[in-house]
Length: 481
Image (cartoon, rainbow, N blue to C red):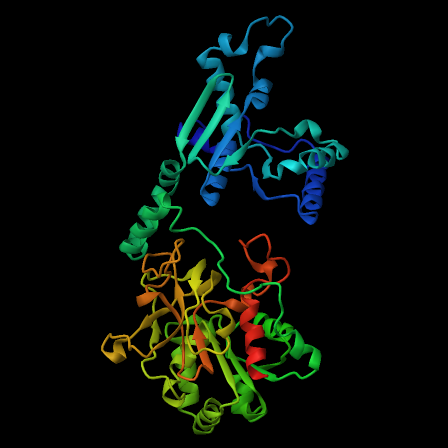
C-alpha cells in the first residue's frame, strides 16, 4: 500500500510499494490477454492501478453507466486467518469490524499489478482454461458482474457490504475536473456536462438505421469496373486524407491525393474529377479560422476560383467537405449554386477542441450522398475546435429553405442544444448542410473515420465488417451511376 492513492488521502506514505516479483508471469498474463482479444472473448478490460480495485470497478461502471455487484470473499480470504488450522468459528459471525475493514482496504485499494476483465458468462470455462494453461489460474478470481437494471456499485464480503449510487460516486470522482473545467472553459458547458452524469438515457448511444448495414449498394457499380475519379483535397497540416481515400476506394472510387499546391501549379485540374472531398485535420496547424484562410487561397486566386466555380456548376459532380474541409467549403458559398442561407463555422461554445463520439440524425434533405441514410440516427466521431454553425451573416436567422443534412440528437433521438451531446452549440443541432440540388454536402463530423465497424468505440452487435457510415460513401457511388 506504500505510495498508493489511499495512503496519500490519509497522508501516510509509509509501507512497501507495489513491485513486480516475476516478469515471466507478467509476460504470460499479457499473452493470455492478447489471445482473448484476438478470439473476441473480452467485453471490457481495465488495469488495476491508481486507486486499486475500487477505482477500477467504479471507472468501468462510470463508462458503462451501469451498476456493479462484486463479491470480494475470495479476495479477503488471502488477508484473514480464517483458514488457519486453529480457527474454528464462522467468519460471518466472528470477524471483527477492524479485522474485516483492514482486509477490505488492502483488497480494494492496493495497486499491485492486475486487471479486471469482463467476459460473457458462456466463456467462463474457456477463459479459465486459458489462464490455467499459462499457470496463472491461481491469480484469477471471479468477483461479480455488471448490473444494468441497478445504479448501485456494491461490494459484498462475509455479510459486510458497501453500496453507493453510481451517479453519486461519479459526481465525486469528477468534482475536481468539473471545477477546473469551469475556470478553463465556458462554465455553462461545464455545468451542463456535469448535470448529465445522472441522466444516462439522454446521453446514451444507439443506432436506429433505416437500411441494411450489411448490404453494399455500391457493389454493382464496383463490379462493373467503372471507377469515378475523386480528388481527395488537402492543404498544409490536413491529416484526414488517408481515411477519406480508403472509404471512397472501398466504395468503388479511384482516389487521388490532391494537394492545393498541385492545383496552384497546374499539375492537376478539377475538371478531370467527378467528385471532390475536402478533408479535415488541422489545416495550417489548426489556427483559428484556418478553414476560412484555406478558402481565401482559392477565392483570391483567379485561376483557382474559376476552376472551383466551374466544378461546382457542373451538374454531374459531387462534393463533400468534412471538418476543416467543411469550414473551407462553407466559405466558398459565393461560388457554389444553391447555398443561400449557408452558415459559417465558428469557435465551439465550450471554447475548447471537442473530440467525442456523438449522436447525429440524418433528416430528409436534398443531399445526394446522404439520400440512402435519411431517417437514420447513429454515432459518429467529431473532432473540431470550430464547429458551431453561425448565421451572423443572415442576421442570426436560419432560413426556412436551408438544407440541413445532419443534426446532433440526444439518447432519446431528439435534436439537442445540450452540451456535450451537441459538442459545439450549433442552433437546431446543425452538424451539416447541403446545397439546393444536393450535390454539395458539408459536415463537421468525420464519417470517414468510422466507415468500418472496427473503427467504432461502440457499435451494435450486428455491425460486423462495415458500419452504418459506409452507406454515405456507397451512396455517393450510387448517385454518380
